[in-house]
Length: 210
Image (tube, rainbow, N blue to C red; front, side, top):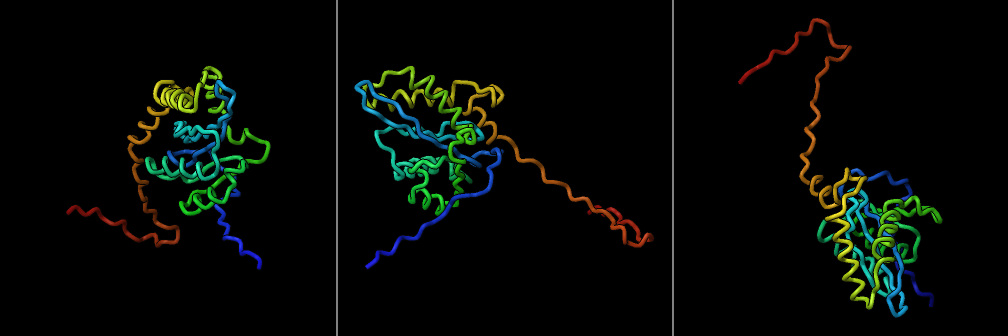
């Protein structure tokens, strides 16, 4: 008897993703790899907000399958809400059914860059380069716990201490706080215009003061 396949949800968006203009409009994520002092390999899942440039989370472990990706997304979403979209490459973890179903349930669009074109995910690629040059290549990790401690300290420094030229030389934390505190723009005034077809002898309404 042929086993019936489970229903496949699709949260993938096929339209080009515009540059983010507000918090949580677009998250972006990717993996990096490195080694411990004893030669054992580990991976990091790097997640950031494309608008504020905040490094939302860096997950460190030997293996980071789709289920771990979902757990990271859930953890961050509990603190700041879900994003409108997440931009990723075609890595097996990102195209997995569990990530797709999480995005579908939460109304999040998954935007996949074209294969072989990491420049389309420029925000996270730039972050990965800084992360490797300033943290991974400069550190000697004796264990996974040691790696987690050092990497988390670097993430905090990246978010709260280092000014970013793309943010007007503010830190991501400062920029995010400024955006949240920024007052909403006033509503657009409604202007009443007498239509061209209206009779010319119609009198303008008088102002009434109550």
